[in-house]
Length: 429
Image (tube, rainbow, N blue to C red; front, side):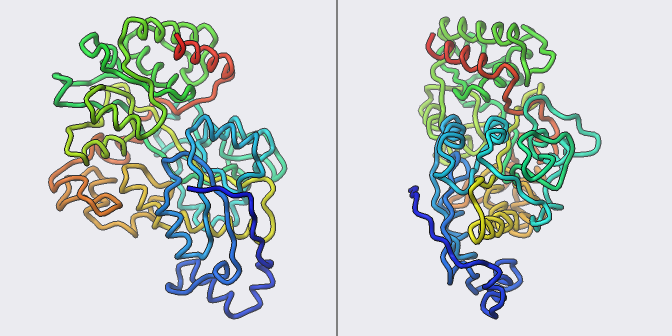
């Protein structure tokens, strides 16, 4: 993956619309016609995108180039580095592919511009979780930085978040999931049913948690409540006293030798589990699948207290304008049009526009990944390798079962700076 500060500015979209070729290109971009390049093929546009490795995927850049003629230059970082870059290097990117807890830190700084929902072709297809905070009308809004709480601003020039949906969206949601503990069922030796199980002395030196403060603290909160050590007023917005109690608990557990490691990247978590150095840890669903693809038993374990969830989206840099801004909107509309959503679904994530993704998946794929049904045939990974054998059922069940049991979202608290300082003390202890 590369990054460059070079910018290729094409002529304005308005002038191009006067030509028949442009009309054909726009139709191709909308999906009405296939096999034709869009206006961006004749007038090259490069968009620089950065974000976590979860969704900055070469296959998406390749497909975008083929379908739209827009070149995506992607740079992958970890979550903390993404948050820092968004604020400190605003001229180094055009598209910020970041998580919603990062947006809470970044957006008020003025380095991003909101999107006009009237220009979002698939806005009405976005899962209501990102609009109202509820998956279904009866859903309870989870604690933490729920995406809808930082998803809108009141006006085009506003830097504070709106309490209700407006015409101006801070980011277009793209990817999300409900996370829990990954286990090696061949090595743990018993059923795992609760977040508290990660602290079982039987797993001393073979447990791991995620070392990204805004995420790891929520794992710790789920563990603490499951153990009966504390009942948070709002685990997504702890008081200093609650933070102290949580971190002090983690420090003692670390000093007692409970943890083997604290991982930051997808690959780290896969290697820890595949090697058997760790048998239980906070984990991402596709990482579990990656371990299984090596022929090693690994399971994403539903827990009685529910899931810790996260979501990410695409945001526009404040400096974008003209043809580049037009291209960014077209890219975002393409992103939600189905192909990318299906690609993400096949990795164990969820698309923000499930209806369009369904059109790019077979009935059996949709049944396995989304409806929680046993696979009728082998389930293939995006790279064409067999991921699951016929008869397999996805860990955690259906989309509604998983996302309907979200207990909290990754979070930025009012006492965030204090929490991060205490978290770093825990890691250094």
